[in-house]
Image (cartoon, rainbow, N blue to C red):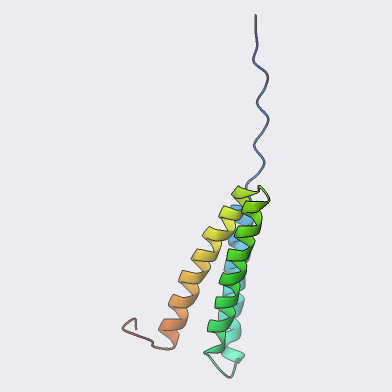
Length: 97
């Protein structure tokens, strides 16, 4: 009787760790915003983090680690949306308040 070879286990995904790190970073930034003199400075930090996430995605895709690259894109997008939404509400930009 033929038994198929066992399938190798899937490597653990890193989406949860990357997402948790991004959410912790956004929390620290928004709590630290109270000590900054210029509230608009946090926008540059968030843009920089979004740029670094995009760069990490491109590097990970080209090196063959697409699943980890995708986790950086999803976490970066979530950080971008939450961060800018909170900043825009705090600074009363647009019609969001």
